[in-house]
Amino acid sequence: MFYLKYIMNKTQTRNFGLDSTTLLQSLEEGWEQLNTDPLNKQIARQCAINAWHMCDHLHVQSDKKHKFRNLRELQDHVKTVCPELAYMQDICIESKHAQITRHPPSILSAELYKGDFCPLDFDRKDWNVSRLKITTSDNNEVDFLDALGCVIQFWRTYTLTL
Image 1 (cartoon, one colour):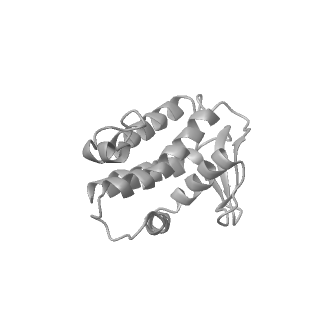
Image 2 (image 1 turned 45 degrees about the horizontal axis):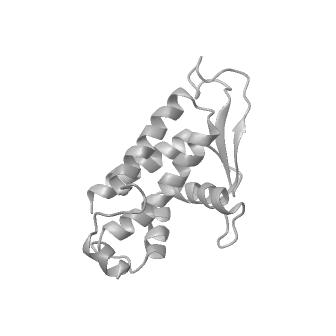
Image 3 (image 1 turned 120 degrees about the vertical axis):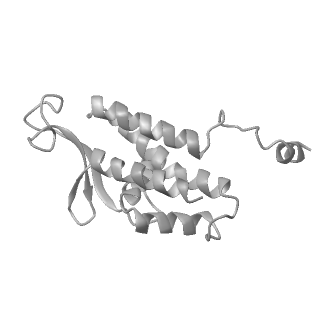
């Protein structure tokens, strides 16, 4: 009976109305907060979680409008189009499960890099400032804010195609 009631009223949720639109808004708000508080690991972590969870919400909401048979196909596709989403996936999975066991991680670490200058006093790209950085599995360093910016731009574009 409960299941039938849930099917009949699809506006009812168990997540306070969270969907891909509000999740993208939350991701963009996190981006804005990180631009004023660029060393906030908690906000960065939540942004990574939101960025990766967009896959789940879009898969359910798209209602077979896309070519993917299941969530895994969608996830694999978006990571090839936007490699930064693989970084967000690793941060999200390790945040929830404390370790990654089901796939080879794309990153070696996500950490606070301690620079010589305050990131609020200088352009973070011009000086050796403290920043949140990702080290990829091939030892490249990626600025978390740069990666997050790519992910947000990808999701903005992707959601327009659905």
